[in-house]
Image 1 (cartoon, rainbow over the protein chains, first blue to last red):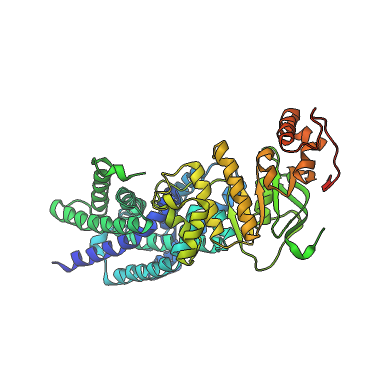
Image 2: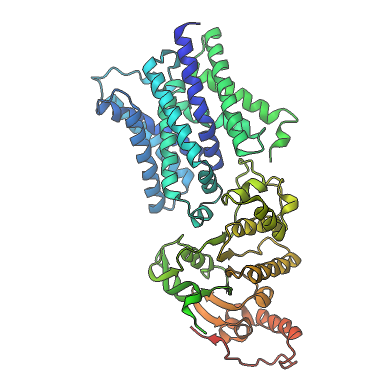
Length: 266
Length: 256
């Protein structure tokens, strides 16, 4: 196997391993649009990262994502507009600001298309190291906060009354999403990151009876989508990132529409 | 009668404002060990807000809430619907309350009557069963104080009486204090030591017998509700006049 295919495979698998559990939490907490908003905001993070002269863009992405989340909370307290409207505004607003900001940086050679649609076949060893550092941190932190995070997901007030540090855990959760967004940027691109989070987890819902089963199955479906998507891309010369999402979508449709499976959905 | 050492909660002069509106206006309240205190009042009276303030889930605009240090509180929120995207059994939901000995867990589940449904999906149980599951989760924290926000909602009339009986039994066996919200005074009367009638401010406070005859209570709930309550009451207490004549009572009753 060519080295670039192996690197692409490892990068994709790494990202989907953490996208499984985080995507499940995003579904349980009804935060799909929030994931999309952070993904779009990450382009602004790229611009910030370049401005700071960072060798890796993760730091800028995390700063901007957490900033966008904080800004959302401020807006929620200042206006009567619904959450969906605010997220729609932030999501596309930050994407536009990011595109404008990047246009100012004509001294930097920048592969904008690569950021928007991903460039998994050009993953380097350094990218891979960042991705697996993210995977390691995310898994350790998630394992530690799993039970309280699940409690918060079910009922925030009840969790708080039971002594759980809700605000701190919510912030931590947001940082984890930002980290995964930064890692997934190279794999599927900013425009499709949310799909990688949500589609495998949604497909997994149809087969799962416990939260852990759902995250495990979501990981498997994610890994399968990466393998299938890359194979599709290499065989038919289709773009790799979108091909991965297409395979995930097909798996979701099978889980939702095949008789005998959807019955499990409650 | 006011033995401060037995107070689990003491709220003094609590004011809560939101959007320029006074939701809770100068409310004093205490809950003591082994005492069942019921908050009643119309929709929008601030019952849930007051409960959340007691639990520290809402900040006060003025006043203070003192909770005895190191007590365990079991909380049953008003509404809990688990997102359908989250696959969860009743057993797992209850387990989220924390780690505990298996035998103890079994006995609590048995006491509340949810043993037969522990392996069901939480999305498949009825409203009444959900309330019992929530009660079980609150009890598994071995609480000194139970805070129950409309425990009998979504429960049919027979089930409601049973549930209040269960709460009464729990208090008797464990000696914990109970603070609960209820719409229907006639159902909680027999199981309540003290009623606080709330309509943003405290309309009246006292023993349920006294509160049901209080003119402020009658005004708040209308004469129909008040008289149906009196009728119910007379079935069980023949000391009062049979014609329904309201006998004023000052015992255990104050007006704020």
